[in-house]
Each structure stands twice: as structure tokens, then as C-alpha cells.
Amino acid sequence: MPKSISRKDSRIAYCAFRICETDKKMSMYSIAKTLHGQLVPLSGTRQIEYYGQTIQYNAVAMFNLNEVSKFIDVATKFWFKEKPVDTTLTSAEYEVTGKTEPTDGIIKVFLMSSKPNNKTLYVTYQGKIGNITLDYDAKQKKAHLPNDFYFPFTSADTFWERKPKSVLDMENAMRISIVAITENGKDVYFEKRQ
Image 1: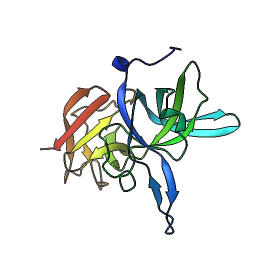
Image 2: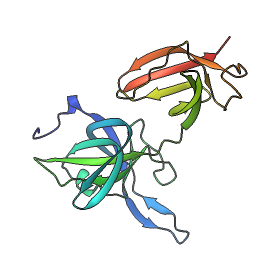
Image 3: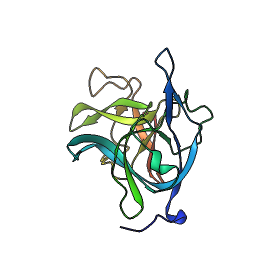
Image 4: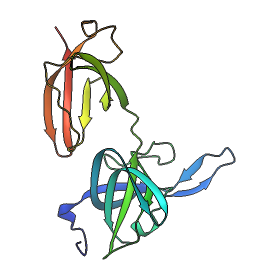
């Protein structure tokens, strides 16, 4: 394991620490703090036992131990796309589910995404209708898939946002139009099936 994570091998992360709770049981958070680290999104939820505690996670982040990262705990919120203006009212992209003790100056943080865009799409598979949950933006008709997400479908497969009556139902049917490779996975765009 490296002694530190270099800036060229890292990306910017923003975190906010829980400060207190209001009388209405609303958590209040610090201003966003900037960190540099590595984020590894995973497909599906994983589980490990760490010091007798079961931790579920779907992403792992690693940070150099410093004046910000040393305060990370299970009440910390994370954002990797953009810096939040109001950390209390902005939903986190990731929430901490656990962390390791620092090793060689690096802390490993287990995260669970708070994906507000998770949506079930229906798809034809082997002549039957199945369903798949994706990080899906209905307005853009776009799904984002992490690098290690197995997605065997092609433009020949039919997708729906609502459960169809049968595999022959072409009302609101979609197909894959473009698959774009991104830095952290793939963006799959859909279009109306003709």
C-alpha cells in the first residue's frame, strides 16, 4: 500500500461533518471541506465484517490522513460531483457506513450511495420481461453504469420505464441508442423504439 495518495492519482471530494441536531430532529452540518482521494464505485452492495461490525457499502474511498480526513465518521456526508452550497439541505451523494484505522497514513472509507435517481427499468431478456435497477435520469433518458457493472444488453433489446403488458407491447418502448464511455463508467442513452 502506498505511503500517500498523490494528487495526480486522486480526485476532489467534498465532505461535511454532522455538528448537531435541531429540536425538530434535523441534523446540521459543517461547511463543505475539500479532500483529495480515490473513489471506487462498485456494482451492487458488498458486505464485510470489521472488528465484529457488519458494514454494507457500494463504494470505497481512500484519503491521506490529514486534518480533515481524521474526523470522518458514520455521520459524514460526501459529494464527488460538485461542491454543495448548503450541506444541511443538500442530499449527500454518499454516506459513510464505516472506515478502517489509518494504515501507512491512508484511511479507507466505506460508502453507500444515496442515489436519488435509482429507477427500475423493464427489459426483454430470453423472451421474458425482467427488471433492472439503474442510476437513471428519465428526462435525459440516460443511465449511468459503473465500470464493473455487467450490462449485456444491446440496441436489439427492448426497455420500458413502466411494466409492459407483454414482450410485444411497443407502447413507450425504448432501445439503446448510444453507449458513451466516461472516466468512471458508461452512460447509456435510450430512444423511442420505432
